[in-house]
Image 1: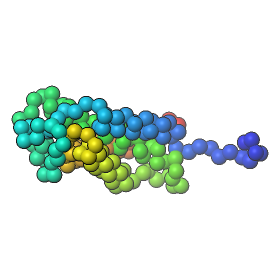
Image 2: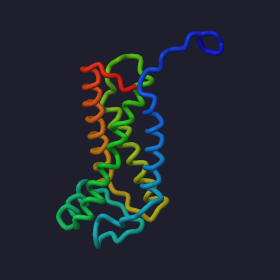
Image 3: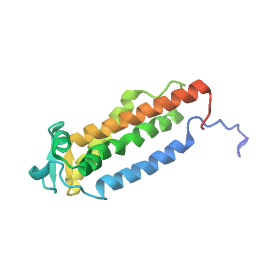
Image 4: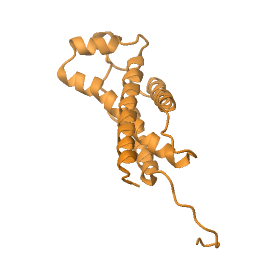
Length: 166
């Protein structure tokens, strides 16, 4: 019984997911808008500062072909890994508000990851001396897809084995 005498409903979903998602988003915005700047990912064509790249896969190719191992890890792998938590935590958070037991769908998570990444890139161009890069959106979205696939795998294991991690 609650304070007012009415029955309380059992919380559904994963209560930790909302807090983890909130903390992750704060860290993500700090890293992408305030922390470090690796400069332009276009090499000599964009020496840092306010730049942009609207050619898909151009900077990915240039970094992969001509970049150092450090650049490949920091820029390419870093952009992918940066969004894995988003693709993983958002579906667990979303489950708290669903009315059915079906898994969270793929496309809304990918859409929101793309929008969030686009938002970050626009803000990097407008408010910081960073590079707005369509390839970052592609890499970030890829990371969210990986995170979503991890969510589906874990949810499938939990559902099949009837283990509750709530």
